[in-house]
Length: 223
Image (tube, rainbow, N blue to C red; front, side):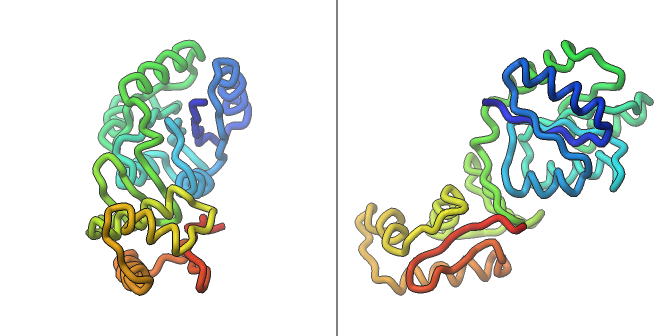
């Protein structure tokens, strides 16, 4: 099912949009502040984000810029009363893919979402995210916040495997087997410890990367 994050503080508008799009087969999650939307995105990437400009805790343009700093291909549509030409231009400059002014027809919004998703493809599967760490699998790049982190091939594969199993502990044996042994590179247990130590240092010792002593590791969203 296609997932939509809608950042909107007007409950009536939000629920109207959610009800309509749900009938079209979309799973819509509503966030009434930019901060709640930010936390949700750090835990999980939807297929598309809809953003209001005027929010209680900030402006949607800065939020859109933050999205673009981490997930460049994530489709974003502004839904806002700000219909001034300068605002529309600014919205696109900050990274929006489309700009819809209120009031709008639900059928038109649905058509724009459908068209944008058709062009973007399945962007959701391209990204993995946990806390401040994100991976772009199509480009094999790693980010900590807005900083791109240079990692080795083995470090990347280790991080990707842990993030693909976010919320579950991955045993040391499984990591050794899938990252090294499957490629005929038989190594001792200390190799994993050293690789993990280097990876932690490059990622600035993230709290979302947990060690299960003598057992394995787990990526866990920060509450």
